[in-house]
Image (cartoon, rainbow, N blue to C red; front, side, top):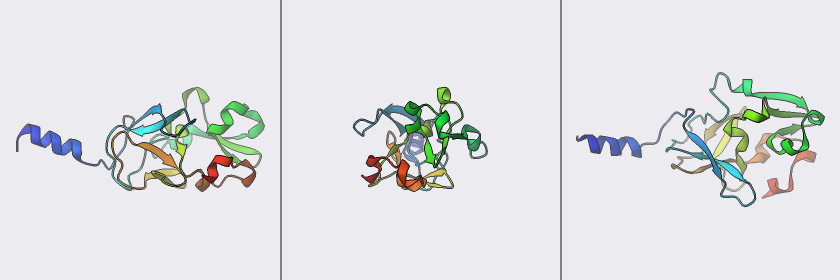
Length: 148
């Protein structure tokens, strides 16, 4: 096999791991959502999505705070649970996962115990979305656009 053929095969394969270079923030395909998280390479169905850090350390990037301690402008990036809120440890240095947008009809990622996995094979430059309804937020915290 020629080098060029091997390179084409490698580039066309779906990867089964993700790392710090697997995702990038770009303008979202959803109107009014600002930025979204996009893949930088093909990712195989079922692959762990390193959106909040390594599997062993992702919880280090999340803190539980009193909702009253989080400025309102930042609360849309959080998961509300009664009087508490799961939030980034540092709003000035948020992992890309906090920028995932909501898509109830065709999400590309699902979580199990808040570790995210590809729901299907993902193409390069595809937006990573999840169904916010699966976050188990209090009903009073659910925004109208979750119902889409």
